[in-house]
Image (cartoon, rainbow, N blue to C red; front, side, top):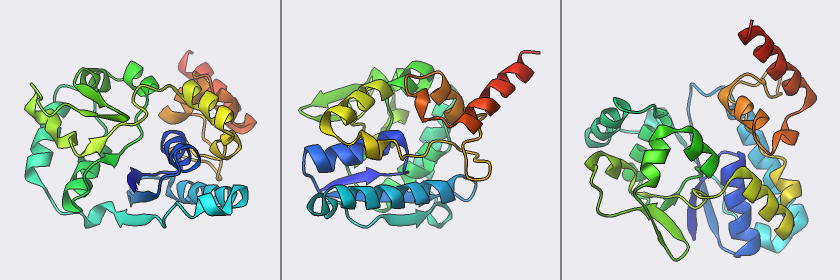
Amino acid sequence: MINLLWTGGWDSTYRLLYLIIVENQHVQPYYLIDPDRKSTKEEMAAMNDIRKLLRKKDQLLSELLFSTKIVKVQSLNDHQEISDKYMSLKSRFHIGSQYEWLAKFAHEYQIKNLEIGIEKDVIDRSPFFKYLSEFMQIEGKTISLSKKLPDFNLSFLQDFHFPVFFLTKLDMKYNAKHYGFYDILKKTWFCHTPKNGKPCGWCNPCKAIMISDVKDRMPLYGKARYYLYRMIKNK
């Protein structure tokens, strides 16, 4: 069984579908509710739709996907050692706060080898993940941090596996088409600040989509807002 952080987004959903459809693995998904995240409703709706589409595609395969275990971020206990390592790295790099509480979650619930969807496009844009990539090791199909880290602070992420770390979104699109699940993958959600249930076109994930090879995922409403944002910003 594979433990997977699932948000209803492209990277984690690609991994989920690949595990089930290609590798026939059981998957236990986890979803953490962040009270500050404005896209929770849309993400949960996307996950529900993806389950329905998988069931429609193949009832037997859909049974490999267990019920999502949902945990509220505010229910997690403090773990000072994790926070100290995170803050030390944050003083040198921009790192999203979610990585601190995801590490706390994995530690508190004693989930080893928890899969997280961070892909190559993110590495190319982020100095932190570019730095992290220097310490990745590949053993068989497993991508994880080396057990011998010259930077001790990185060890707060050692409970994780990074299965799509060296794949781009275009790679995933190609693979999804090849294995016949691109129709489901297209139903994923990406916007952090939706407007009336639609992608805003302005947040970082929306901007990342618009400069990627999968910008066909962005509906016309979001594209219009994206180009309006660029016009205003460039004035």
